[in-house]
Image (cartoon, rainbow, N blue to C red):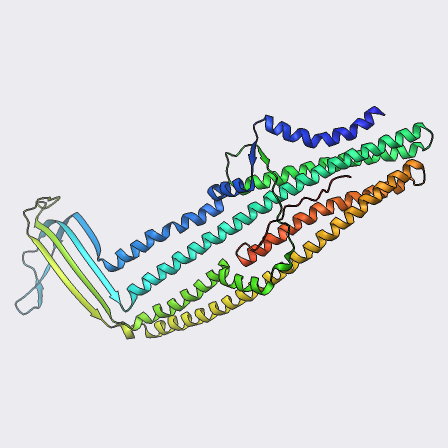
Length: 465
């Protein structure tokens, strides 16, 4: 009897021994704020988006320098050796004749050249600046989306770990309650008020609860591992989660229409869709550049040494005179590749119309997502209220069932049905509370901004009474 009674106490003690062991092994306390900070600095997905956004300033500076300043090219010590044989020459009238002194002529040369090139067609400079600005804006929005998604994922993982730990505590408390029921059944059996069947059923309930506790311990360990993966820091050791107040509040104050308007204004996905439309509009303007005149200027300054045989090979002397060449070209490529240019313009116009439709579809989808998430949040709030009320009823029913079992007016099967219902509703309350938080996070993801107007710490006791 003492062994069976101690079994339930052992189950209840498992939960409280584990945190103490974690503290003794040097586990660090991890708050939700700490988890968000660690993830922002180490999560691989977000760091990729952040690294890409860091290119914006460099590329914008390069665009200005590349478009405003001429492109420079330098060729140093370009040397060569050439042999030439001419068997046919020309007479005074330019007619080809046999060369009477045909022989090999050998000569070498070395040249160094500095070239400057600058080209402009239509509004290419302005278009390049706008294109780079849109690219940078899209990268910044991608980084914002990545950060928002990361914060939501970390919050989900953290809250899920807290939920699994709370369920673990509930299972431990249920194990303690099953041990008490086993002790009562054994005592009544010793007084010949119950049969051996009741004792075996009570012992079976204790064993089943031990199995449920073991399964819940595994679920909690998995949730902690998922959280560690979201953090992305390989150096994080054993962690001990700190209790966080759940943002539980009545969502009746949230206006779905106002949430939709907010989402259409601040949601990063919608903003990226608008950037895509502007980018397509710029593409239409870029395709029309083919009708504009093209101006290019080239300046070459070079020194060239050319002498018979190998005298100029690797000639690095500076006594050769400098030569220069300046070119200005003005062309009107309006009719060059006319049909291909016209096709490019038509394709750019179609792409613009398609991106506008994609933007409209995105706005409709975001509006639907916000309204659905708002309905789900309200539904989870009502489910939580019903679950809490059901738990109060189930706990009172279990208390009365235990009293009736002790006085002999209720069988053990009836008692078992009552505490199964109480255990079920206790789990439902924990699950409903965290389901509300999950629905709130989904709504904030759809809107693109925090919508919780107040954080009401939950002080309801869902433990055994």
